[in-house]
Structures are given as C-alpha cells and as structure tokens.
Image (cartoon, rainbow, N blue to C red; front, side, top):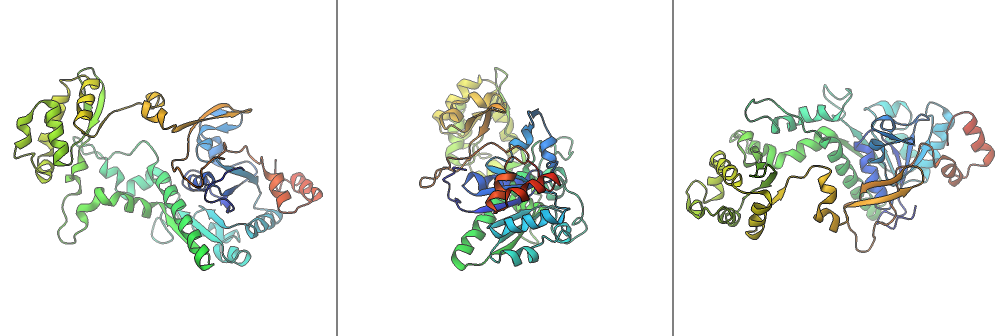
Length: 397
C-alpha cells in the first residue's frame, strides 16, 4: 500500500469480524498501518450481508477499507503456525471473539506475547469478562438496550423505548479501540513495552452517553430525572413549505438571535426564556413557540434569517440529498474510487486531515484471500510450501 499516514510501518493482525473491530482496524489502515485481515477460508459474515457487487457486499466494503486479506483455516495446525509467523513481524493484534474463545485456540495474550514481547494485543467484547452477560452473544441493539441509549430515545408521548436506526455502539467502540491502540503504540515507543487492552462495547457506550444522557445521576444523593435534561426534546421543525429543519439556541446570544429572526423581540426579555436555566425549565413551552414561528416561514428564508443572526441551524437532509450538499461537496467528504471489478465506488474519505502525514493511499476493501500468496511470500514461504497450503485449503487466493 502507498499510504503515507502517521502509522506507516506499523503492522496490524486483524482477527475481528462484523463492525466494531473492522471499523477500528480500518481507521488504522487509513492512517498508514499495514492491516492484514485474517479470515476463514469462506470469509467472515459481513461478506454476505448487504447488496452484493461482484463478490463484495456494501456492508463489508464500508468497514474494511485499507486492508489486505489473508485467509487461514485456524482449525489446522499449519494455519496456526502461519499466523504465529505473521505475529512475529507485527505490532498490533486485534480480536473480538467471545471471552475465552481465543485462549482455547492457543492465541491468547500470554501465548502471543511469547512470540512478540512488545505486541499491543486488543480484546474487544460485548460485556467484558465478568458478569451474567459476559458469555452471551452480542449485537448492537443489545448494547443499545443495556447502556441506556434506548431509554434516551424513549418516545415522549407513548413512553416507549426506541432504538437508534444505526449501529452507534458498534461504530463508537471502533473509534474507542483505534484511539486506545494509538495510545498503546505511543507508550510502546517511549517505554519499549507492549500491553493487553481489554475493551467492552457496554463500557464504551455508558461512558459515551453519560455527559448529557446520564449526567443528572452524577451527584450521589442528589440525583434527578435524566429525561428532564435539555436534550430531551427533538429539535426537528416543519416549515411552511413542508420541509424539515433543525435549529437551537443554547446561549443568551443565540436566543436573542432566534427571537430577532422570528421578529419576536418581546420574547428576548420573557422571564421564562431570558437565562439558560429558565430556557431549560420551560423547554416545552419554548419548543412550542419555536415550532409555531418556524411554520410561518419557508425553509430557505428562515434558515437564511437564522444564519444572519448566527443561530445554529440546518436543513434536515435525507441520505441522497447530502451527496449534493455544498458543504459536503466543497470539503470533498465523499471520495470516488475506480475499480476494474466494482466500477465506480463512492465512500467517505477518512475524517482526519494531517498536515505532515497526509492520508493518500486508502484502498477499497480486498476480495477474499486476494493477498494471501503475497503475504506468505513476505513471510519467506517458498512456492512449494504455498502451493501445499493452497492444495490443503489451509489458505486460499
């Protein structure tokens, strides 16, 4: 790979599947690491979830950019030996099997550390190693349920819990894992020591949601209803021309600007709304007024008025509309790749923009086993040995 990112020279062995682990290692690959995705001979599950285009599903494509693919049948001792040889050349080892599984495979931290003393070894789980849920299977909705996210999304009228229609726990865990690995690599650079990082999706989400979702539970003995916080109301408003927008006023300056945009200057000094605390206390009445005022205007005109008064606001875009949005286009957030196999592919570019180590070499997700032979050659296996591995289905290409 030609990536010039800040992690150039770092090799990552990626034994993860689904979303949380693959998302984390994809970020490392985007930032220059040589990420080798180790999969079963038949491929991991995400290769078969979603719309398929010449052997690549959109689900797999979006979580496995900037990686190479090595297939290994880890039920065979020869495959385990290959993996051990790969580990000896690597810096990071990431797996998200259920607790205990990787140890039974002979690939736990203690065994891997014997091969590479300074390895950064990462274990991703759903619930951690202890507790009644620790051995259970996990998917994103389960973490939404246990972490309080479904409660935060609770319908204000029916009081029915709601789940978010995107896999926030999975993807947030990916971010947390990538950050933890970067910190561990920095520590290793300074002190020449590796370590074992354990990270659970439930832990990540409770920490992630706490600042506004559960902050009212922070002072022991002085707890208040978490649902009473300012963010308890949806800031989605319908305009005169039947379009949806969002707008909010947290600071006094923003509230004044909103009142001016509505030409309702008397509201500026209304005691229900003239301080941040008052606006929270009377949030239902405030939202009703905002909704009523916005309905008097077309989306374009009221958004222009909000912009003039420096009120945070935006149109609510559907996912097709965002592709044509000027903000997104001018920042080149969506990138296009040309593939002989898949045709033209659209994908978001990596979010960080580095001044000294630009991310220039990210590549589309690999086909299953596309790099097996090349990686085996890099590990100094001879053609005769590689042919044997292929014949015995220890690996594939």
